[in-house]
Length: 99
Image (cartoon, rainbow, N blue to C red; front, top):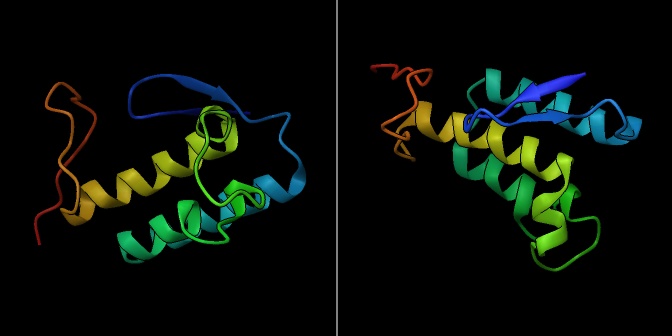
């Protein structure tokens, strides 16, 4: 199982534990329901966030992990869609949704 990031990197998530996959599926569901970007961002890197695995901050190792990379990408897509983040001007795949 692979996930394509906005920057076009492909992350292999087939080796992630079931709990990590469940977290990503829940996050995707929340993203599809258009949950608030900032609430989703807190679920990924806020205090007690699952991808931090008990760490108090996002370390280099956490930032490089497949779980964090995919989770952050899911949230970034919501941020772009909701207008909280600006898309990369060179990324033709990002579509703006007008309210």
